[in-house]
Image (tube, rainbow, N blue to C red):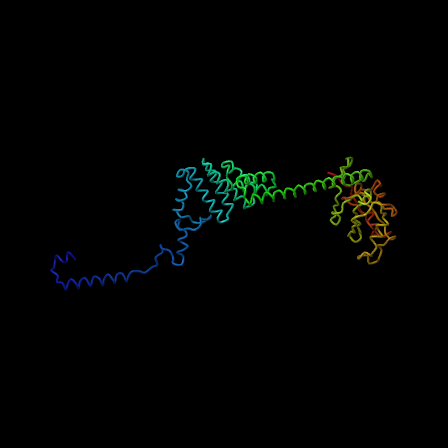
Amino acid sequence: MEELAASKNWTEEERLELAAKLDAELDAFIDGLEKKRYEEGWPEDRWQEEMDKHPFFMKRAPQPGDEVHPMFEGLQKLKYDPEENTREELALNYKEDGNFYMKHKKFRMAVYSFTEGIKSKCENQDVLAVLYNNRSAAHYFIKNYRSSLSDAQRALFYKPDYTKARWRAAQCAHELDKFDVCTQLCEELLEVDIDHKEAKALLHKNKMKKLEVERNQRKELAEARRRASRLQKLKDAVEQRSIKFDDQRLNKKLDITEELLRPKFLPLEDYPVHLDEADGSTLIWPAAFSYPEFLFSDFQQQLPETATMLDCLQTLFAEPLPCDKNQEYRVGNVNVYYENRKVGCVHKVDMTKTLRELMDEKSFFVSGGSLLFYIVPKDSRVEQEFIHQPRRPMVYS
């Protein structure tokens, strides 16, 4: 324009005409530009989400896997870098984090934060007392009572007049049944504040719980002594009768234990051999009666050793066996055997003998904590197959 103006003398009308032409050309150029979306900005429907990612506006800390804003990393370095902070500043920063997590009930994260604060090795004992007390509270809320008590006591080490820590320690001691510790802590609280209602209530509750626990312990001890006495009498009775067990190793002294006397058959496992409470001298045995023909068993949970095999059969056959279609299984029409697993052979039972007399026989052994018998029809194919089936002696490792 200046060059044109220098080479030609323009009238005012010409100047206005040229300006209008240039404006029109500029408008045409702008209108002809390619219209495309601006992609460096925030979409309108996600502006709040994008704002939340900015360190100045975010409402929560980044989670594992989240993209972290460079400014956030810088802020973290400023907050946690030992070169940028004193030990006390670091401890206070971690305490602030822990309090934030406590407020939002993220107690395990709070434990971590308070722990980092303690590890900063701050020399301010008041700050250390608060860190230990706050970590004690976090442990308490996740029921880590032992750790909570330890931390509360550590807080008291740094600050002996710390009432909150002493109260927390008293609560933990009560939960852990440390009754004397709880009593002492409550009494110390009441020395400072005679109207401490919570301490008074806990002191009474602690006393009642201690009495109950001690009473239960006395009961358990008395019951343990009774069990031991019963077991000893039972052992004496078994040894007196020279009862043999196929669990016993050859040429080894019999070690009578509760495990040895516990029945291995599921229907009998709650009915181990015991002495009759009425006379204190008769052994009561669990017994299994197997029917080889049908591959099932009857179980008698409590048979006195004074019962004869005939008595046992009369009880077993009081009602017909469901699977005995030919009614062969009845008193007088069956034979009963027991097996000597040590040598791999069977022995026929004298129906008139008592269980005690049968156990006195050299070849009879208690098997799996129970008496085991086999019942077959007399002079039948089933009996012959049972007698002659191959058996192997027991082999001990």
